[in-house]
Image (cartoon, rainbow, N blue to C red):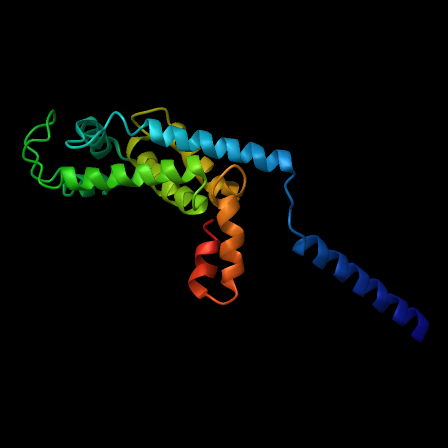
Length: 200
């Protein structure tokens, strides 16, 4: 009786260890896969970079019609109201930014955020931070423009940025490849380095 009971215990322990191993073992990407994802990262960064040129400073006039469309075709009730009372506050025309008190500073913030995303993703500098910011910007575009453009356009951009958030693609073909090991080495003695190392 005691022999079969200990044999059963060994089987249970072996099954438990097998389950723990299968749950805890990380998925390792091949060199080809991570390089492919790095190329996708560069492509998405270039997409954000290219979108900077039709809404250039100092007046960001190209952005204005899109903000108008977002305020009219939003998929979340109340979002149009927020845009009308921030970006479009005081605007007297649907065709020009005259009278808009907050449009230029808020548009400058959007433009700078998109520049940060583009730079981060193209050069692989704090890639996860750039991808998180890209996810937020793409989600905002999805909420505002999904009904006025092809429904899936911004949804796909959100998903691409989420993938780039999950996987540190800047560690291949990017500055993070050099930066990450140095931050991880400093992480043992520095909390800030430990926090920042996740973004590289």
